[in-house]
Length: 427
Image 1: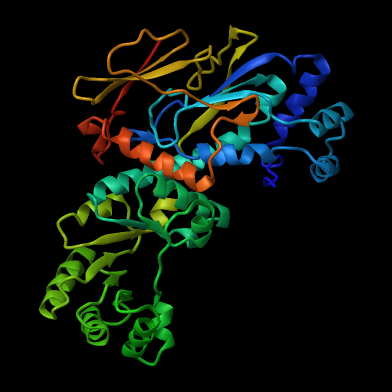
Image 2: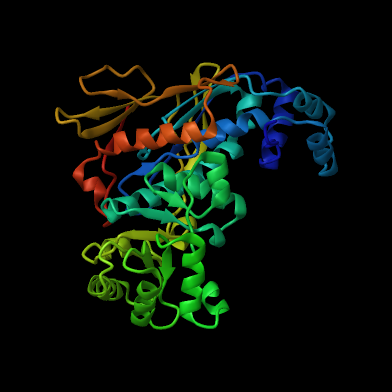
């Protein structure tokens, strides 16, 4: 049974619908597009994430007795509106970029074709999912790039809303994070999960040795021991004494991480634990990870900076009506203008396979060698085009992201502020 999602929306969508039902415009054929006018300041690209979650949510976007009773209780008593909602299910078409693809200013990452009544209802659902997940994925992709193939673990559940934590773990895994601490993300989406202990476990015991012994006895010598509760060097010595040189890893969660990691590696090697991994955590972001590039670090745990606005600024996507009964329509407000007409989009590539431009047009785009069509059919007549499980959809998106990021121009990988890596050519 799909999770009920119809009330995950803004009231103004229902008031617009009520007025459109009253004056007869609700049945007009419309095209809505989702796009970002700009990337967050200084970002070179964005990563589209959340499409799979949106398709999961769509079947549950129905107004049953409970939802209708809630609307009445909140003062929405227009009987024409309530009767229409009682019979509603989305029957339109949706096209979009494949989840995991890169996007740039003006990229029409989602296109909804339906009556005004049906299309307008999806605005908040689509934007709340795509804006959140794309922000997380875009930030996480920069961290994966900065890590230079060293593994990253998502561990931000304690810093955000419980459902946002699951979505964040999914979005981070999509772009290359190896695992998450979030068990629900493992259940829903097959994201690998991991976790050992916090400082509280060490403090529970009479001494560090007792805590390490208990963890090794429970989890085996392959576990990762947190060694910075008291003195880092003594913690490392005790960890190796307890687990032996086959200890899986140590974790550093505070202090001057480059210096501590270097000393930790030296000490582990001196103690014969040459294969023991050094894992670092402690409010890491892409800049801190890049700063650890020369340090002997084997993996990163990332939390706060990934799941909060400071590290993952909003994607800034909007949902705009661009066509009505085949006629292009556009908003002309200063700074918030839109381009009318349903768009086509292709990504141009040079002979070496490097992406060179994003071409967005309200007319068919004359094909060239190396062009890749970006808009794919996602929903037809209200039904998803692909019948895949949530975990399989995530695997497909992760694989697609791995492929398309290889075409990003070299300047796109820079962490410094700069212009978008690709120019969006609009015609």
